Image (tube, rainbow, N blue to C red; front, side, top):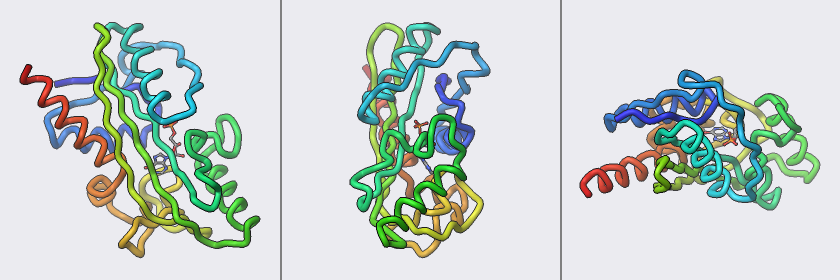
Length: 198
Ligand code: IMP
């Protein structure tokens, strides 16, 4: 089975692609299919954003389209950056700028770590109107000293529960086994299998 994945984030393509391959699903990055203007991200929840993105492209392309909205929720920051994770330091901010902003925000509050969780929400939209969705989370903590070069985004600052290494210090297979994205993909594939049986 082949599905279009509506993202420009190479980290997401690598991680979701690797995991989906294990289940016989191949993803085609959107930019390899067509040039379509991106919709505005206006949702206040991960669910809303993933739903908006997937249905927008499925209607435009008349193909099944998978979209993910994900982010980091930090307890000391009352759940921020949340849905604004990719724009924490401003529109088009780089991962480094967002990480710097997170470190600053923690230091401003006089802490050098905080409980946190990553959340991932996938929505698979079919052009006829039906949709499947799944969610995954991984709990842990964020720190103010970046470590490691794997993964992407906030991974150098995030230590999963039960680990001493940051997510950026773990090999891809290990991150995929425990991550919010890995868990959400597993649930989604389970649902796709069920629906195929109808
Ligand atoms: P989205 O493209 O709107 O879903 O934004 C996702 C943002 O959340 C990314 O740009 C990262 O800042 C953050 N994020 C989501 N998943 C991860 C992950 O697995 N590792 C590190 N950062 C992540």
